[in-house]
Structure formats: structure tokens, C-alpha cells
Image (cartoon, rainbow, N blue to C red):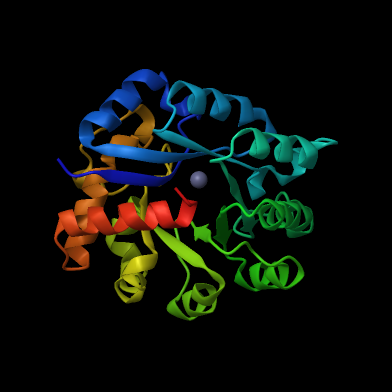
Length: 261
Ligand SMILES: [Zn+2]
């Protein structure tokens, strides 16, 4: 059985329901390691608990997602730093910028993102970045607070021109199964051009559902089951004209390189 790595999911999300059967299905499908990303202060404890329960299989990312930038409370940076120190194999995420949504505004998102970039630099931790329709603002933030030497652009939907600017900075790019929808073929084209040594795989479960015909596992209300990762890997391998075993090995190596395992 091939060994797959999920660079980005949200196993703590209550929409997935009971976690134990989800994790059992992932292991049975060949998922050997995953990064579980927090999205706001309110779910840091749940991510912490999953890490403790699944030591070595779950690695945590603690952070504040741009959609929740307005929810931070006094002292959040200090609490985030404490968690990162307590979990030496943790990274920062999910954080970033998003103008696809209008609330919270970019003015509210920016300082929260910059704090996390600064912390990533200070502790030399990788950071997982969500960037949706905010590329100019992303590079503005990088000018103010340079990213750490390795970072993951998750569900990367940017152009090759954007990727060319990010690669020298240390960017890795994770491919989400949602991009297998025919209307997203431009993203697949970008992944065909990206350097292989910078590509990772992710589910972003319970979001970013792949096309229904590619699903090995389903959940109520069309939530994305993270045990679909091997199918996403096979479909990307097909699109890149690679052997699935080769893509599994490459993305495993890149996962370890990006997150410093
Ligand atoms: Zn996510």
C-alpha cells in the first residue's frame, strides 16, 4: 500500500463528526501523517488534543485563519507562542489573506497575519498560508514581515507568475482535490509546471470536496472525508503523467522537507 501525506486538513472540525472512525479510515487508506490546522483560538485545544492522542501521526498547526481574524482576544500572540514552544514539531497555520470574503476586511486580516509571520520567523517554524484573491496584499505583507525559510501555499490557486515569485522565497504548494473539477483545469496546468520538489497533497477536509466520481469515502452534507487523499494522489499522478507510487514518494519527501520532520 502506498504511503500518503495530508499536508492540510481540519480534523478538529465538528462537521466531520466523531473523529475516531475518520482517523481509522484514513490509516486504512494509507495516510501516514497529516498536518491538522487550527483556524481560530477557539479550536486550538481540540488540535492540541488530537496531537496528543495521535502522536507522530498528527502534527499540529496553530494559528488564526483570515476569516476569523476579527475574533482574536487580548494576549493571543503570547498564547500562540506558548503553544508553539510546547509543541516543538508544530507549525503555524492556518493564516493568510482573503478578499473573496468582505468581512472581516483586509485591514483587520493584515495585522493578524503579520503577527503570525513574525512569530514564524522568530521561532523558525514553517507557516501554512491561505491566500484567496489577495496576491498583491500578500507580497506587501512579505515586504513588511518576510516569511520563514519554508512555507506552504495551501490549495494553491495562483498563476505560474505568482508561483515564480514565491518559489525563491521558500514556498511549497499543496494540491487540493477540489482542483480536479473540470472548471478548475487552469490550476492543474499550473501544477504541471511547478517544480516537483515543491508539490504536496492535501484534502482541506471537511472542505474542498473533489468531484463525486473520485470519492472513495463520503460524509453527510457533502463534507469532504479526508480518507479520499489517496484518490486525489492518484488523480494528480495521472494528470502529471507520473506513477502514483512515485508521486506518493515525492510528496512524502516534500512534506517532510517543508515541515522539517
Ligand atoms: Zn484549510
